[in-house]
Amino acid sequence: MSIRSDAYQLCKSIWDSPSHEDAKKAIESINSNERRASLGLVARQYINAQALGYLVVDRDKSRIEQQYPPLRWSDSLDSKERQLLAAVHKEISELNQLCVAPLTDKMPQCTTAVDPYSQFKYQLPEDVVDIGLLTPESMDTMAKSFHGHPAFSVALQSQREIIKTIPGDGLLKGVQALEHALTKTGPLSGPSKLATMVFSLAKDSPEGVMFRHTSALMCIRASLYILDELVYQAILTNKLPVLNENNVIEVGPLKGHIGGIGLSILCQPDEGAERIDIGLALVKCAFLPPRYPHDLCYVEFIQVQSSNDFGDVTEVHLRSIDENLNRFPALLERS
Image 1 (cartoon, rainbow, N blue to C red):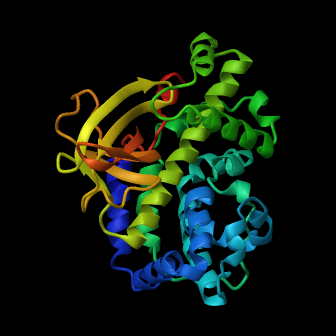
Image 2: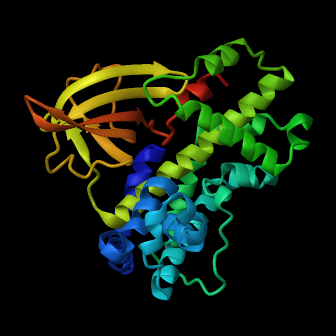
């Protein structure tokens, strides 16, 4: 078993929850309601934080309207929706806290750095309820599996004075800067300056220790986010979008680099691919090289194109996710 396979089992348990349909209907209602179309769009495409995304847009609506004027004509969430979405996020947050306990119990200053949502500074309402979407047993099983993530040992090996003197917000900024550097070039390439620095740093130097620690924290944070995305997708559907021989027209560049393994796919939407969006997808193409055993991937770029031969086609850029739900495993290999 792996963290990824155990995450799949966790998702299956969600479908048996009596709260599953209520959560699903609430989110689908927001996304399909014309009077909330902009709120749902901003939550999914710009905030991109699962259930929390809707709560953040609702909370910060007047500020976000300045950058995205169509949001002005969207209705806010009603109290029942806020309560249900807060309950969903509460259970996801509790799962995350259990998953990172081996690190945060020993190094509490790392708590905000590994929290995928700390930048939103969202406070759960005092009257938030428990809806039992995730059972204590399923969360405990998932957390024990996540504790086997190789980034924990790397992070805990870095317990030196240089780390202990850095405040939590400093670690968070370092993690965010590293993730931004890895993602801004897209999944098909890695930042050359970062690669040069990684290969030139002496592991025992202060800079090397700091970079190794930051990399481990970022990988834990990234894996938590993918776990949460799987949970969120399980609320909405029992099947992720699939790219396979039925809808893939062409596999473009496929590259491994410091930022992971990225690939480009040109597809013609069918039942399996029509739901492709920024987020998770399964790639099951037998004609991919054996050394790149893709399965679960994170979609980072989508563009619809017109083709004389195939009509409208979709170009998708994806980053492979490993057995630890990590999009950036190459960083740990260098640690």
